Length: 237
Image (cartoon, rainbow, N blue to C red; front, side, top):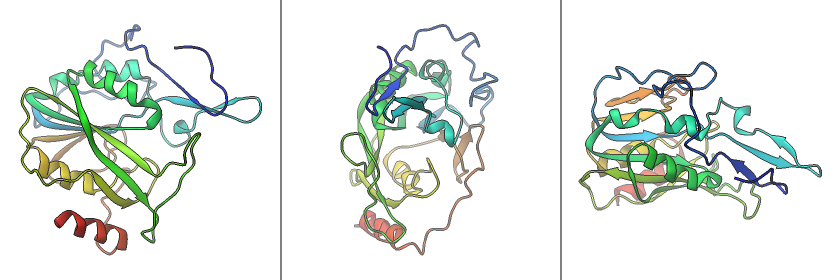
């Protein structure tokens, strides 16, 4: 895995095999993990996950470590995420949609495998917009970031319901880590349920929600947002 990297690069956990010490049941007192036992509505044909990736960024002349994700929410080591018994929630034929930050694409693919899934493709690319509907330009260690990725994994034979679902989601950036609501609409068009969201921060009709921050984001009514209106109009074409 190597030592500390300087120059603003990320260092992330790669080892998914280290001892966990908490029996792999989805609970550890000092993490964001809560029990996965007795989740109603399963087994699930679709799982959506936005894992709280743990990583450090180094900045400044002396490469001072800065835990940027922890500034907003508790994060969890990749090995602990891998120990979650997600396979027990999944139906024989199941799709897994997983949001990932660029520095953790390798870890995301490993995590999907640890949960019993095979990586297929990039499901969605969220192109972030400002409140005015113009492209948002973020920071970056190489190129300046404008998008975020959601990867698709499957197990068994998952049926694609609609061949017209598009990859690009144009939607405004809202609270830190909050994903566009349009993801749910596209997922529901693409694959069958039952549906569950892991590490959820809001509830949605027809979905089970699991995580220690459920309810953090109230479902927003964005019908009057110019950016969202344009995005939905494009989706309908």
